[in-house]
Amino acid sequence: MELAARSITPVADSTTSLLRVALNLTGSALEMRLGGELDLASAGLVASLATADLPGVTSIAVDLGDLTFCDSTGVSALVLVRKLHTSEGRRVTYVHPRPLVREIFTVLDEAACLAS
Image 1 (cartoon, rainbow, N blue to C red):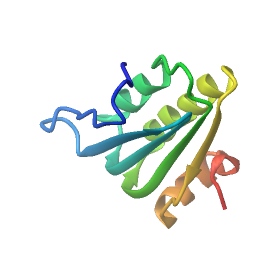
Image 2 (cartoon, helix red, strand yellow):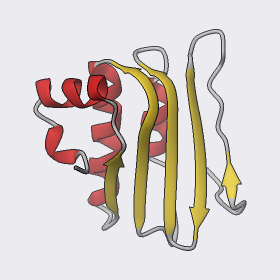
Image 3 (cartoon, rainbow, N blue to C red):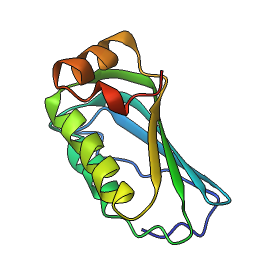
């Protein structure tokens, strides 16, 4: 994935996914905004971002504020993003989770990932 542009928007196939992803790179900080539904149909897109080559990026903030639904497959994809990028020395935070999203993170024992 090339991040030469300051802002890019990967788009999942709308016939199989209701997820919106917007990426914004400011200096060494990457913001990933997720909107819509993160589930089995769209988790692969988020998981692919886990393996993206991000030279120069030191922090990733994943904004969950517009995420209306997230199942365990979606949480697994987000956890993969955190694990792979933190293993490369990047700080990964999840911000603005809606109550439903916070609840699924809590049920799956991943609530510690969420910013308060």
